[in-house]
Amino acid sequence: MINPVVVQNMKSKLEGKHFLKLADFTKAELMDLIRYTIQLKNMQKVGESHQLLKGKTLAMIFEKSSTRTRVSFETGMYQLGGHAMFLNKNDLQIGNGETIADTAKVLSRYVDGIMIRTYDHAIVEELADNASIPIINGLTDDFHPCQVLADLVTIYEEKGSFKGLKLAFVGDGNNMAQSLLMGCAIMGIDCTVASPDNSQVDPEVFKQVMGKAAVSGAKIEQTNDPHKAVEGADVIYTDVWASMGWNGDLEKRKQSFMKFQVNDELVKEAKEDYLFLHCLPAHREEEVTGTVIDGDHSVVFDQAENRLHAQKAILTSLL
Ligand code: CP
Ligand code: NVA
Image (tube, rainbow, N blue to C red; front, side):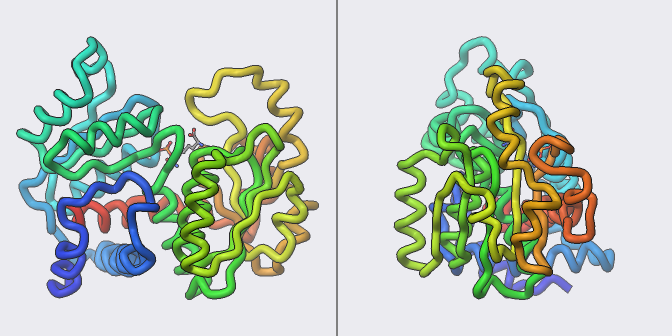
């Protein structure tokens, strides 16, 4: 049965807050969300009703495509007894020039929360500044916090604890790399990011990450040597080499990233019981070989499933 004390506890901590980036949350708050996710997951597995958001509506604004984020948020709201509304940019007057601020004020009069996937992170901040309801970041060019919460849940389930773990992110210093670094720094997980010199994470974000690591004790490093990053790693993570919205010369980019492919040779440097994670969608034989992503160490589909459970924890805590 759902423990009303747990629900009340989560609500008293997070009700009305936005979920824009992990840096806005403490280690204790993220740990509570991870445990709550696992509780909701167990309830769903045994078919126990947990309609905690009856009568609530979530607006979902998408300016970029999505499989996991869209389907898991919509299904999550349904399982919680609420309703989700899919809105792409062209369905909204934003597409005709209505301001983000006016959109935030109007939607706040109708719905109980907004999930948005967009380009510039400043857009979600502006939405949050003008809304009187919680705003959830479903991915920006800078951060993907819902994904990293699900990733942390997956690692916690597999390893039983975060203590002493090392995560290696190999590839583009993108929204995933930045959010993972932040998640690891807050939770006290050592993290090394290996990226080509011209694709490293934003120095300003890295500085904030180092600030969090100083509190948790996590060892955070950046390198352009994928072997150094993966050496002794418990978790290897990669993501696409060209994120949504990037429009340079793809063939040239693939050549400069080839050294960062997660393949059978590279994973030999990791611990024997390493886990392979990828936020998906994946491009096999680019950032990762089929032998690795479809191999025994890969937990990418458990990770994708956990998006559903983690977002239900976020939704019931905030809305
Ligand atoms: N990982 C992730 O966010 O996937 P989608 O782009 O399919 O939502
Ligand atoms: N870095 C990728 C993540 C997709 C979930 C992108 O932004 O396209």
